[in-house]
Length: 474
Image 1 (cartoon, rainbow, N blue to C red):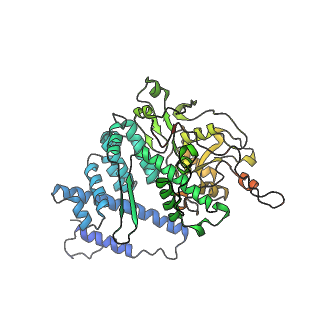
Image 2: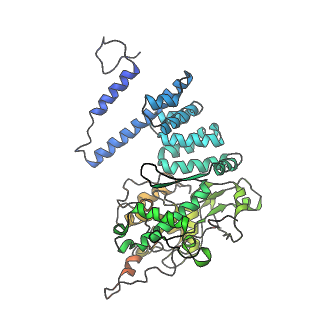
């Protein structure tokens, strides 16, 4: 054994457990209190790499325990004090890392986190360890991207590389769907649980967010005090109740009739953007691109499930899938440009929030001569759009992370400074002026005489052109 660097010579054999305890002792000496923000950033970065190294050691422990036949998950849960779910995840990653040396090396070096490694392992289960571990570009992206963003990228990669284009996986996910409703015996509160395949969940999430947003507006929105009417969590619970029952959450009376009468379910309806190469549609290239924005690659067979009133929209692309031209409008992006931005950006170019939570932003401000042209438009979620206009980060910093020189997406999209406002998925609120960019919303807020201008949503209101109506299936 190596001599313990923290023990006096002659103190006897030193175990790895002793070395671990010495490291814990060093951590006890750290005190972030009183540090400057740059110092705190540096400490967080160092501890993040240390955490990844610890995760790597946990994986090595799990692999050794499995070789000894002792059951890795139970040891990690008992001795390592991990939750049952996390212990099973570490054991799963450890079982694959032996076949993925490049991934194991990056985790051990602290270049990627356990979340990144788990995403890579999950992708390997779908398309093979060699395809994942041998793709150095994918591994480089893991080192740059946030864990949430990379998880989506890994799913897209696996869907494109799997022999059946993800058909078997989607079928397994659909068979695994489940839901339950039960009363908590301790509190008497009713609880609802559901698990859905990603395509179904995409529709559910949009409908849920849209109706939560409608309730937020009804409670006063940005000009009122919606949190004094009900909390964000109460509003989300009420939105779920109304979507399921079709009844008002306060009065329990029936709401407007459904789709035919423009009722609550019709107003909260969601749609999907299915993007497919023309070769996939006409059968000339069955291995071409086929994905749902916000979900990822899907089997080409999903096109057969589109409803009869599906809209097909042709778009012109350059290499790497960049839209070249979709026309121009005045200040506000037209529906075709919204669709082009959705296809290109897939969501917020800063935090990857889904497109239905995004607004269209001019990279070069309208006031500064910026055109409403596809090359000057970007998807930003409400909080990051407001953060930009509050000068919390620059276009240059964001755009450097958005595209590489060859036009492909760089998934390292999170800026150093995040907005302080809560994200819409936590407060259930989106900017009621989605289509308006820059100062247009404020221009409409007051007339010259100081009175409020109630006509605040322009005729060209934001809407996503999607190619499949939901939530029903055709």
